[in-house]
Image (tube, rainbow, N blue to C red; front, side, top):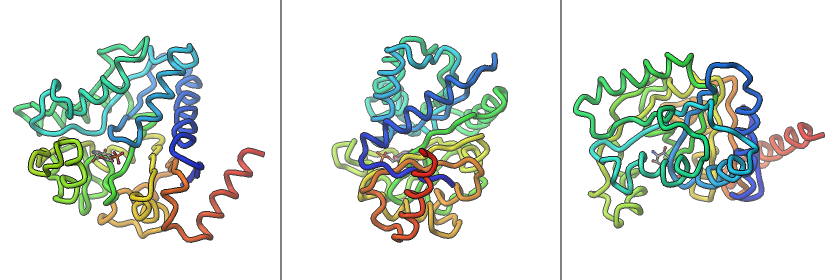
Length: 263
Ligand code: GLP
């Protein structure tokens, strides 16, 4: 696992955006570059940077296919808290060359959730899998909507949200946890770890326990983010604020390694 510690959210976002743009630009094959994407506050800075780079002609999305991590069950696309709405509002609508037909987001209004999830997995497979999956994690370490005790080999499916997650996400629903949908469609932990590379953004004091569990904890279904330890191409991009629960040794180790990377 590679852990890139940046001073603050802004620098973390810039680092991650540069990394993603570099991967897209290095992709010379005719088949599209397949990018997995998250929602939430963590990736907003990355999206802003990628939009600026795209509009400045530094990275093109013309040959990029995207798959989003998750979507609330029961929210229409037009709902301002649906992840479809979030992605278009914060990212896709601002890119100059993203093709609408290359955007894949689970349909939260489907009347066949199991079929929708199965088709999503099949569509990912039809492209030869995901090249790079960017993710964020919840304060309880959930990756996509894979809450604690979801199988570490889970595939795309319906997920029940924990009370904790509904409370945390209620800030977007008038601070009323009851207004947060109780279920979501989500890629599985196995779907994420099947990707060639996984880049997870972890920032802020409230994610400190989750970062420590991801990097230093045992691999456990209690912290589904810990499955990344079993992935050969996992990168954690984090900020100083999120490092509060790492041991000093771990913190120094990763700073040291990255310093050598730059030499
Ligand atoms: C939601 C999403 C996750 C996301 C998490 C963290 O629960 N389903 O995919 O990683 O929020 O959000 P934030 O980045 O706002 O802390």
